[in-house]
Amino acid sequence: MRKRILFSILTVLSASLLLIPLVRRDSPAKTPDTKLNFAFSYKLQLGEIPENSKTVEIWVPLPSTSGVQEIANYNINSELPYELYFDPEYGNRIAHFASNGQIPQNLDVAINLDVVRFEQDGLNHVSKSGTDSPTEKLKRYLQPDLLVPIDGPIEAEAKEVVNGSLMPFQKIEAIYNHLFETMKYDKSGIGWGKGDALYACESRQGNCTDIHSLFIGMARSQGIPSRFIMGFPLPEGKSTAPIPGYHCWAEFYIDGQGWVPVDISEAIKHPEKKDYFFGRLDPNRVAFTTGRDIKVNSGETSHTLNYFIYPYVLVDGQPFTGASYNFSFAQKN
Image (cartoon, rainbow, N blue to C red):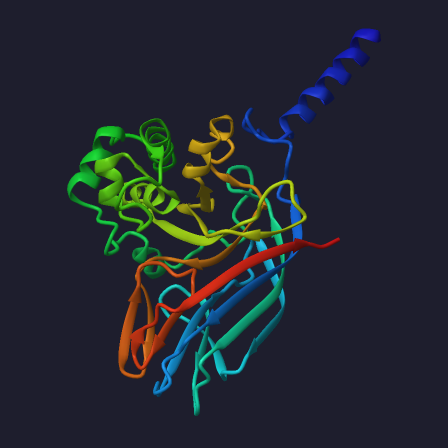
């Protein structure tokens, strides 16, 4: 009788173990429920606009709600009238300000909003943004950008790293590991910061834009949709602080899993987090725009922006260099 009872208990335990989901051993304690709630401020000042100027136009990127962040309570203040729209290629949300009369010599634009940003885990959780992206939409993320070719040295490097028999996820992992081992986060010299994949390929250094551009070019050369995400980092360990500049990362698409993030530049700066930043992102950030070669229109003229995070300003149809901007955040309860 005891043997029969013991056998029954073991049978139940064995069946229960089969129901436990398999998780990678390097999975962090965090879950996608880990989140940050904060207010974000984006301010622009235009000074010394020429007195005889006839037109001023300003484009400012705005973050949108997605599967990993919630945006609410937009508050936009400006002397100029504006309109909000989504660019047709990537779906980025954009505010367009345009003068309709007399132009002051100094102009301010202040944008305040609330953000809830979640930790993103693309390895153990199916992307909240969905796994059914239309084939036509994915095609854009297989094509080259002006500074991200997918042939020549970029394709050659990918072929050296990737075994043709590997599955797409394994190819991406090989590219990620290769760039982690061979790239240096270095903002010295000339050429860095443009998101130039060829510069990164030749110099083996750069900032987040350069390193992720090389990653995207190599991934696309292997037929894996990949995209560029631009946003702002939040200084860790602080509840309120100015933000000195942007940060970018990349995502790749796997059928059945959706968009999976990587942050190679952060992994290079923090080698102990290498495994974490392959497929996961901490919530200390907010995404603003997706894609490269983003177009904004001024009348019948189209302007192509290499990437879009800082304001783009035209005075009388010409790029204006007398703009300054600052960004900050404050955590909320």
